[in-house]
Image (cartoon, rainbow, N blue to C red):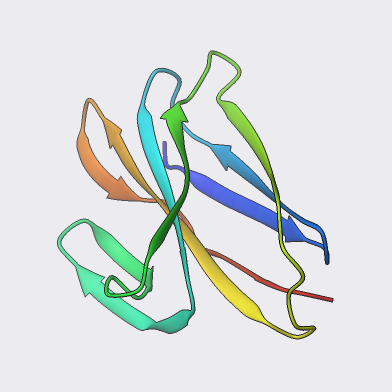
Length: 103
């Protein structure tokens, strides 16, 4: 099993879909896109120097956690990268990344 992350963005909100192993913890971060970084816990698609926490929690029994966040006005074309850090019985790992652009 692995964790996956999906997202969508509009001019007014960001929706984040986290999917992972039930009862595992996660922290989802957002940053400007960066080149892939090889780490001991997986491939990082986010810049560790500029991350902001978007959401965190425990995956429910359904294994799906949805979060919707209101946004201030953003410039069209702005692209952001997100990735979750997952904490489960097997240790710490990284989810698949999600990149979205403001329409």
